Amino acid sequence: KNQVEQSPQSLIILEGKNCTLQCNYTVSPFSNLRWYKQDTGRGPVSLTIMTFSENTKSNGRYTATLDADTKQSSLHITASQLSDSASYICVVSDTSGTYKYIFGTGTRLKVLA
Amino acid sequence: EPEVTQTPSHQVTQMGQEVILRCVPISNHLYFYWYRQILGQKVEFLVSFYNNEISEKSEIFDDQFSVERPDGSNFTLKIRSTKLEDSAMYFCASMSGGELFFGEGSRLTVL
Image (spheres, rainbow over the protein chains, first blue to last red):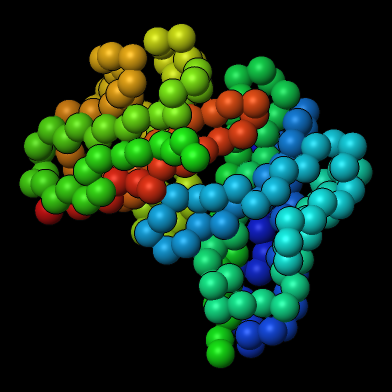
């Protein structure tokens, strides 16, 4: 069964600190993996997309990694800011041709001053 | 920058009433989706729509749900007889180049 699991479920860090969020998936055949940021009560916004051949991709203070062999991805946030407080969702799509997206459970990040 | 727009932002309805949620996808996109997110839970797939027909639907998308593209711009989700458990945020998304673009959501509260 295609699944996407994220950890931790929630995380509290102090402003300025770094953190790493994890995503494990069992989606097959794999097409790509996305990280989305979702502010409370808002729609998800794409942060980065990783294809099979990419290991690392950065978007400002966000760096995503992908290990297609172990089916794991991480999202590293550097020098966190209060505005980083949100849910971070890992979304994996397969190559079945139906553009199907499997959503993870999300990690709720709270950045404290 | 083009965006997906959804209306209403919040709707309160009585159990058993019909609800229509509206979405205007990004104009040159061809694939459209509805997702649901119950408070505190993960985003759940409801239905995908391509070429004026449903391409895939989840088990959540039962006979109480329907989607339409009544004209060239709007994409609607109808719930015929709402239940308490339909209370959730409903997100519309359109897709281009494999990238999903989400609207801000419609919060549905069923009393």
